[in-house]
Length: 104
Image 1 (tube, rainbow, N blue to C red):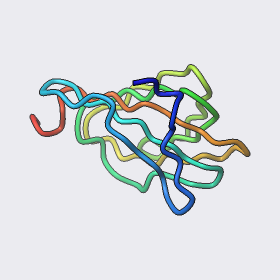
Image 2: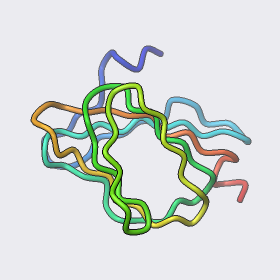
Image 3: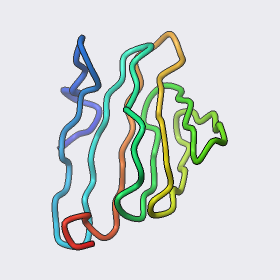
């Protein structure tokens, strides 16, 4: 799979697809159009976010982080987060979860 092809953008809400779904690793691709966000939630595993395209605002437990294409951001288990595309261009990022939340 090429994560730069057929990016799952959605006009109404965030788009997403599974890239890898194995026992010890889940990789999701999230696609956000300008102004779209991932609803507030807590990390359900050990997480790393890798920005593939665009710029994002990532609020981790009340602290804002501005991340751009190529940035890798670690997120500890159970950390509250909100991810938003605050830019004027589409954005997509990969979410690496270890282990797969189904194993937690």
